Image 1: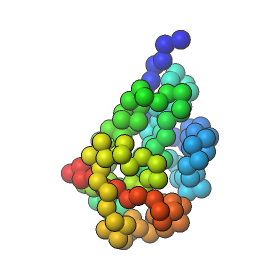
Image 2: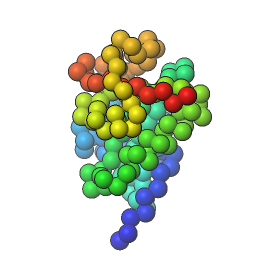
Image 3: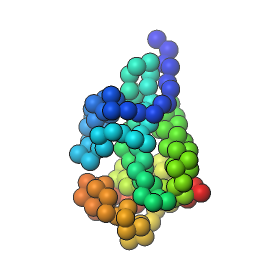
Image 4: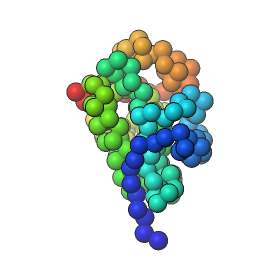
Amino acid sequence: MERQIGIKESNSGNRQSIVTLLQSEKLPVEDLPADLDNFFIAVDYDNVVGAVGLEKYNNCGLLRSLVVNKDYRNEKIATKLIQHVEKKAKDLGVDCIYLLTETAPDYFTGKGYKKIKREEVPADLQSSAEFSHVCPQSAIVMQKYIG
């Protein structure tokens, strides 16, 4: 059957599918927001095959939980998810997006993100669960200006 990949805003009804997808890739779920505001999902018909989220901290954003089902990789789904989250960030008045990664710094470099030091991240974002205790200190911090 031909794939019909679409990107749409997530809601709490998609939460378990997102959790399952994140867990399958050994990504953190303990701080996943209940309401999933500013999260997007990639769907193939009704099957959730990818996800990404944005947490807003003043005029900064934290890109988090980017995941694509391994059977759907190399189809530019992650690129589409990032584009949606960056557009949402602009709509929300965010001018700079940060992220933490242990496995994909080269991928994000190709999307315009630059490695920075953890100390360069704004204090309110550093106090987020993702920065303060979910992701290890060894995670690479990256930043992209979108404003």
